[in-house]
Length: 168
Image (cartoon, rainbow, N blue to C red):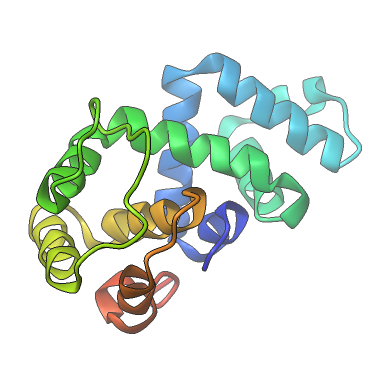
């Protein structure tokens, strides 16, 4: 099971940059919270990072966000990116599983899910969305929820399409 900071570290640099750029463009408060957390972790003042060119700043931020101490911040970036930019993917997955939700948000997940339903739902996502984005979502889904489905974990561990960092 990959934690949020590990997900950022294992995904392609391009996708990690997309997530950070998305927060920069759409959620300034989240972006500034991440920037402040990175500055604090690096023992810098936030203004030092703000004055750097964005590409250089984002490279430093992403390198720092892969640290275990910043797992909460990485998780917030991932959740926001998934819930806002990829809401339809979340909806498609939950619909395929037959789970009641409110625009991709679930109050309570079932403690177990049928193997065939999980396989079919994952396959449907892989047909419709980029495999790396699907992999990040499923890893995050498995890590960030209180309920862990062993059949989903087995797919994440064994299906090469759901592996992160293989081609980075």
